[in-house]
Image (cartoon, rainbow, N blue to C red; front, side):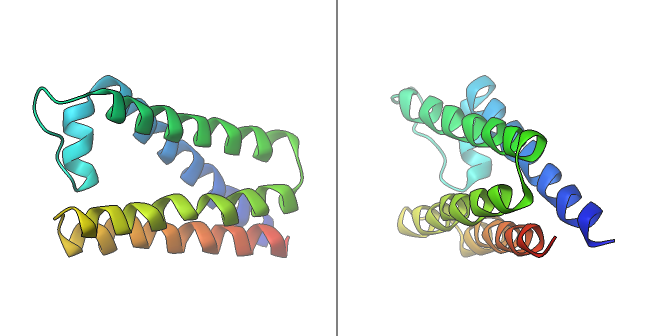
Length: 123
């Protein structure tokens, strides 16, 4: 019973981070606003593209590990990749974003990713 839950949660997280990456590539200004730190209009869009590529690559890598590797490898991936939403929490707080966004989205995501890692290690 634990295996479908562990892999199901991991797949949902991988799909979500892939969607976030695609959103930053396709509609960067809207994605930045939802992230919690709106981008400067007509600013350097390269940084938004970098965020999109980072998240897209993270999602694709996670999907590949889930499809072609062991649950331990996927668990280590989740453990390490939890650093991204933890870092995002700090970025939002340091750059004037709301605490609700920082903790309600980014920190909560980090916790769910860590739970996913624990479940993958348990199967």
